[in-house]
Image (cartoon, rainbow, N blue to C red; front, side, top):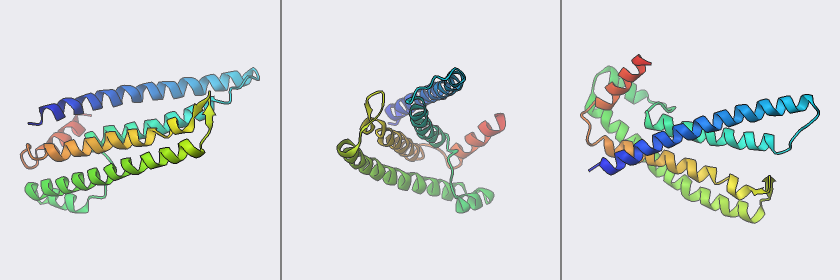
Length: 177
């Protein structure tokens, strides 16, 4: 049942990793080039805004990867208590609730970010190299969409896992790192 979701999730993981690597390499190269060109009194006005937007995109891509690996930031007092008690069924229900609430919240953020793009289309301007700001802020719904999908997949996958299974895998992966 989850096979198509699993394939899509694997693609999202690989695509996000690849794009994140490209962004980081691009940021490094552009920043170093900017520094070197300044030695010769040459500067391009579009370098810094491009790097800023690559950082913005990288933050979302990092969120996509962290969500899929269940390593995102979270305040999880109840979950840690249930882990200590090894109450895996209750812990699994907490993870399901968090995943579902996160998915719904992010779906709402995706919807509202499209409203932000329409406002930016009306009042925005070209930021660099003739690229209009409405295209640059489309990073927001793109990132939120990928993160919300990862939460949806975690929620759906939790129904096919044994209680504690996903957590134990994550712990073993963390030890191996």
